[in-house]
Every structure is written in C-alpha cells, then in structure tokens.
Amino acid sequence: MFKKIVILFFILSLFFISCNRDEIKTDSTQDYILNISDVNIDETIYETKQNWHITNKKVLVLFGYDFNSPQIVQNLTSLLQEKFGLAEDGGGVLPVTYPDSFKHSRYYVSEFTSMLTNSETDFAGVVILGAPEKTHTVLSRLQDYWQGDVPFPVIALFPQDDVLGMEANCDFVIDKVRANEDSEGIVPEEQNQFISEAPEVLIETISYIQNIDFSFERNDDLQKHVIQMYPNRKIHYFIDPETGLPSVNHFVLY
Image (cartoon, rainbow, N blue to C red; front, side, top):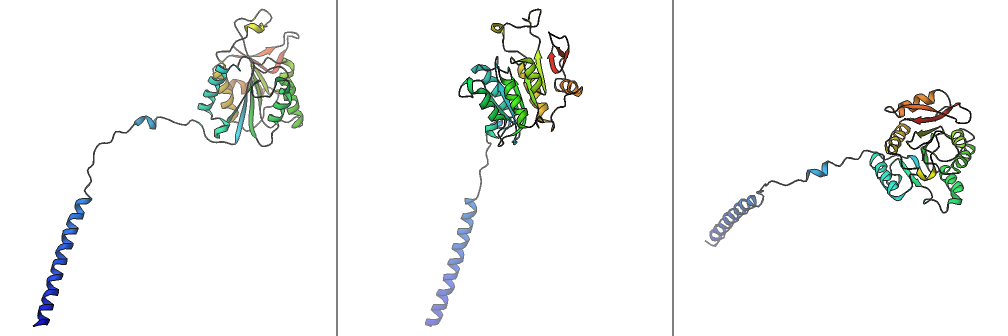
C-alpha cells in the first residue's frame, strides 16, 4: 500500500512540474514581443562627404605677400582642407605662412630650405603664393640639394621676389595682369592686393600636381601643361620688359 502511495505521489509531481514548464514557456514568449515604432533619422549625417584621401605625398603651399593676412590664410587653408585635406590630418597639403611659420624673417632662407630638404616629407610638389624676397635663394639651394634635378614640381604663383631668380629656380611662374598696373607693367607696392582668382588658380595648380608623377622639362611642353592646368583661362608668355623677349617658363593669366 505504501509503495502505491509513493508511486502515485511521484506521478502527481511529474504532472505539476510539466504544467509549470508549460506556463513558463508561455510567459516567456510574451517577453520577446517587440513594439516597432517610427524612428526619426537625421539625414544630414549622410550629406557630409570627404573629398580627399589619406596620402603620404604632400604639396607644400607657402602663403607669402598678399596672401599672408590672417583672414586670407584662414580662408585659403579651409578651402585646401576641404579639397585636399591637410597634412596634419593625413591629407595632401602642408600649409606654411610667411613669416609666421618661421622664427624670424632673417631665418627664412635657412628654415625654409630645411623644410624643403626634409627627408621625412615625401613631397608631391611646392606651390608658392606671393613669393617674398630671397625665395629664389631657397629654391636655388633646393636645386643644389638635388644636384639640379628636383624630383617634384616647384611653381610660383604671383611672386614678388626677383623675377629672373624665380624663373631660374621654378618649373614655371604664373602671374596675373592687374587693373592697376602702369604702362610698364609695374604695380606700386602699396596697391598690391589679393587677386580674386587666386583660390581657383591655387586649386587648379594643386589638382594638376597631384595627378602627375614627374617634374616638368624646360621646353615647349611647359606651355601645354599650363594650358591643361588652367583650361578656362587665357595664357600668354611673360615678356621681359628690358629685353622684349618672352620667357620660357613665365606665363601671364588674362
């Protein structure tokens, strides 16, 4: 009799356990019911597009005379950052300002030479805006460093340094006819001003440099490169006012 009672109790226990499991299983399904609602997504986060890519090749850009005021430097640097990225962020442009990036203007030649001959920087090119005096000396030292065969292009835009010196040490020089030039093509220093086309010219110059892997040859092909670099502009050779002869690598934008 006792055995029968024990067996009956065991059977009843199994029955209750089974019922409890079914109840737990039923309840658990309720826990996983998801209430889906609309989510407000800020679509502006998808509008930001980075136009540049990380690169080891750097184009050094010097902001010289007419381009070194804080406002102009800030505006141009922001433009370069957007288009090419800055070197500090892994981008392709290394901006330098005269004289702020140097200890003192009297150290400009030695310090700028050190920048351009720094073996840790892989230069894609050098673009100099409004070259200050003695820039041609720096570029001459750069030529000596590379034994006359600089492996990247050096371009001067609207320079104010010695004309012959810049022509001798740059791949080419770009100037702009200005409305306030006198009959001899001379612009009084106090009337020098920021050239409105400079941002576009700068962008076109850097874009061209980044898409080539050679330095320029001092021959007739230079004009072809300049025309390709500035396709929407009229270009003429610079005429030396003393000799009346056109320069091989100095061009004027109209």
